[in-house]
Structures are given as C-alpha cells and as structure tokens.
Length: 118
Picture 1 (tube, rainbow, N blue to C red):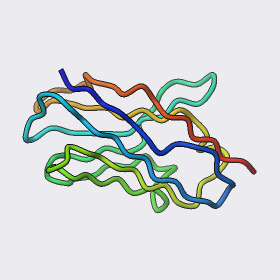
Picture 2 (cartoon, rainbow, N blue to C red):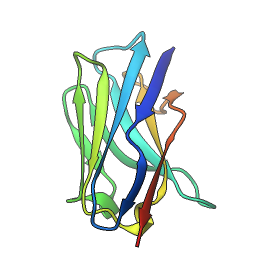
Picture 3 (cartoon, rainbow, N blue to C red):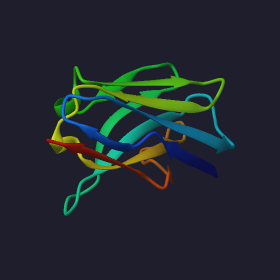
Picture 4 (tube, one colour):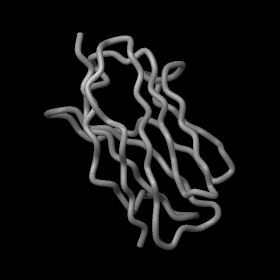
C-alpha cells in the first residue's frame, strides 16, 4: 500500500500560480505512474495530468500550456506547477498512484483545495 500526502493548495487570484506537491511513502515500484486529478463542486473527479516513471506525460486539454507535471523518483514525489490559473480551475486536487501494468489508480491522497478568485 502506498500513502500519498499532498501540499501546496490555497487561494490565488486569476492569472496567478500555485505548485502542488505529493509525497509517496510505502512500497513503490519502478514503472509506476503518478497523477493529479481534480473534483469541482457538483462534478465528477477528472484527470488533470499524469506522469510515468520514465517521465512520459499526459495533460487534459484544458490545462495544456498552463500546467506542468514533474516527478523526482529519488524522493518519490510528484509536482504540479499551475500557471495562468483560471476560476474554472477551482477544485479539490487529488494525487494518485498506479502500480505498473495496472489500469486503475489504486492509491489516493486526501486532497488539497485550490481556489482561484476572479
């Protein structure tokens, strides 16, 4: 089991930046994937960005060019740099972990609130 702890959320004005961090502890594996998801009030949780062990990334269309996901494998930590934030980015952001060769993310963090004011 992998435990995930997020940090870095907060309140920011539109156009501002935030950096989220997520530290994984427990038994992690080479070849895993880590990612960020978000859930806005009244909406389903959706993928924002993911990154494989080798550094291959995926972004949902609405954040391309504004958000950057990265990871430090030595520290078992994944980051999400969020620039040019918009009010519609307001949500609870969750870190997630997926074992190699698995389809679903099996471990989740507790979530961190990001609020973007207009």
